[in-house]
Image 1 (spheres, rainbow, N blue to C red):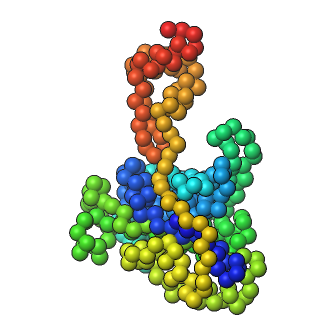
Image 2 (image 1 turned 90 degrees about the horizontal axis):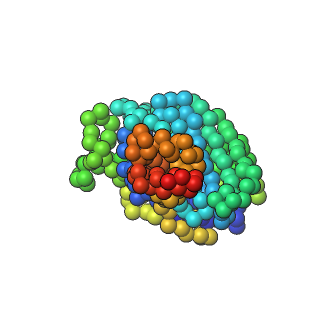
Image 3 (image 1 turned 30 degrees about the vertical axis):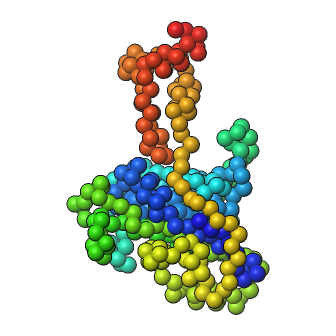
Length: 314
């Protein structure tokens, strides 16, 4: 992932190749093809928004959808870490849209997009978070990110987010799209994922804006560029044409969740003595599943007994 500027700081740029981390998220949540594309786009968009954060800050992007996918949530930080999930990972469509791509709009429907920024919560700083919200105007995700930036943060932006899903491992089959009710999740993979955000600063002159709009109209898709071997900086160079880019920062993005066995035990302990004792008596243990990464934590009867000792009873 890169963060850059161009045209004497009149343009701010962010771009990332997220194939591996989107693949990790889809594998963990066992998302069906169209849900995988929707989740991958939101993860990438959230990651790019988070690229401008400061240390201890994090950003949470939530698509509260009226369509069958339910909610799509991504959370990222300043270090290039992102995690997320969809409430209905099996949401899918078996037909493409008019552009020959996965019909993400059909899964998302209407609803509201929320973006929450907070800082220092993990270390006990209870700073009041900032939250902005806009209606979901497209459902294609990238356009909704652009609408949010224009309306809530007053920054005119071009946002392109893409995820290419394929089933067969054979390179020769890559022209065959995944849009069938008969497929194997074990063979499904993310072949390419990534995106970019191009933002016009208030100082940008009208001629530069018009020039950039003409360039963007002829830009290849994100997944085309990634499949051809371009990295994030090369993607931006393709997008901006003859405009020179000044690279500010480069980060290695990753799918990363802060959950742990220790946190799982803390959560159970916070439920109180009666609830812990009930888990011990009825189930002889407990299981916690992290929504963000789908990691399962099996808590043994012995561990529950240790928690009960903390309440002053063996």
